[in-house]
Length: 186
Image (cartoon, rainbow, N blue to C red):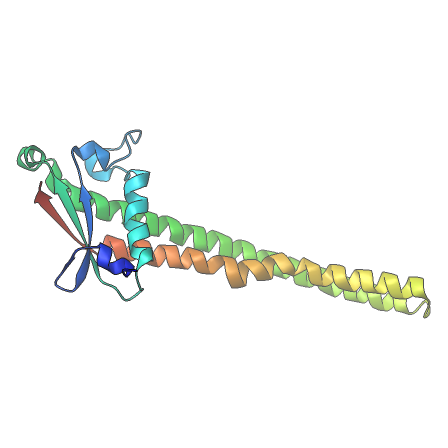
């Protein structure tokens, strides 16, 4: 079975992410009212670029090659495509950065609340244990202990596991925004 990187053309040691256009409109979201050079990429085009990068090892170098109709290049619309792609992914990187900061702030706040709750449940647990050694006392003490530790679950999960994919996406978008983008006639 062939390796996945054999499915892509290469030039100068870089894997080419090739996009063939019959019209410039294929590349951009038609519902985006922004001027052409600031338009959002079409979701399928964005996913194609990202999926290609994710298919190959992290240290692989890429270059984006846009094959556009000759009339598009001659009209002067197409030369804006490389900057439009870069702007799109810069915006996505900034958006992920903002998302990271919001989630991190939320996680820190929840962690403080959870630690205070854990302290309160441990205090209540100790107070309950002073009533004796019976099964009901033991059960109630354990309920408060478990409730306190469960309160930590969400903030710890957020801070340890959920922020990493946001950072990965941000880094990916920044990487794409710095890629060489070449425009060639079809």
